Image (cartoon, rainbow, N blue to C red):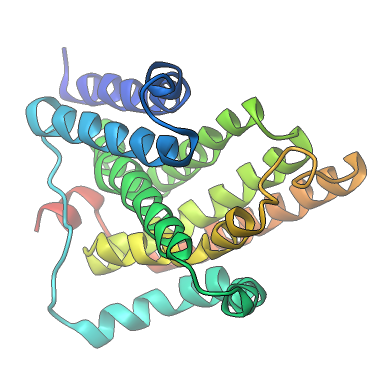
Length: 257
């Protein structure tokens, strides 16, 4: 088997395996883990399984942290930070108004774990796998990685309406584009992890106010389709920006240097 076919197979395995794990792990753990901790157990198990697969089979180098050129790294993060975090200012203000409790810290830790797991799987492992499967096709690799990350949110259809999940899928794909750009420019996976976690601050508010339910997270069909179309247009615009941002980069060399 050629190297590109081998890594194409590895990429497909990862793309299929992550959502399957996210779907079936709760079915296995629900008898021993309460609902409060089921999400944390699910993400921890996924993280450990994908880490083991990468360590023993995929063998993709993970650029978890590097401290060189700190200011340059922050500048490379700025466009993604503005796009992802400015819209969450209202959620941050809502969170600040809530009475402090240990559950805020608990849900904050859970959101951070989600960021760690998803960024490790999609930016840390899948991105270089796709790069080896499609050598020299940087933008195609970034788009496939981002769409795979967006599509994993389809598992939310088990508990939420499609009118919430479809726009969420497209918005997550846009997020994936930006975080691919950040990781490739900085070679520092911790930055996408932190951006991912802070961009999910609204989830803490939803958990604390008990609004993370099918009835509360839904909208009329027309609005949902309109939002999906808007995010699709934004996807194309952001893809053009990320292309400009990474146009001189070779993913394999960038993540192995």
